[in-house]
Length: 152
Image (tube, rainbow, N blue to C red; front, side, top):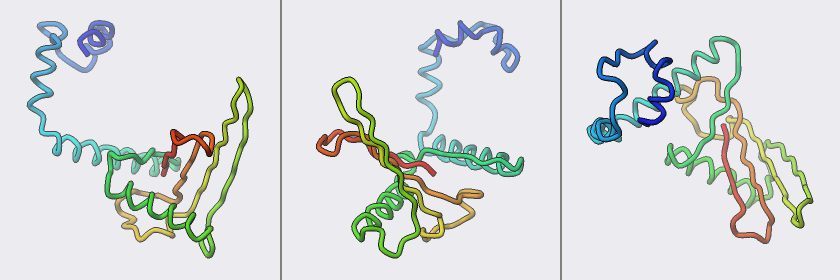
């Protein structure tokens, strides 16, 4: 971070008073050590939701990747898609798309599922304007390192 600060010092001066210059990496480490991780996470989530609201207010859409950083919701969404797969999507509103690419001596398959949020038992106030969940899988079906990801 110190190196970044030095490379962007002129730009940072627009927002920060830096009478002693860019803080050293030790100073930056001490500041971060004093931050409560749970409080920081709560502030960050609140900030993301505010940004989503601003985007919606301007009539635009947004896409957020859902990972382990929102553990409870992440687990619920994974369970939802796995349940859909387990019942072969019978009675579930969804869309599916698959691509197969061959090159460099390998085959990569990408699979994409989407479903409306109405399939979730979900508090709509949590994510403003949330309409759809997307799930993607990339890799070779025989490869245990295949990657699954969620986007909302």
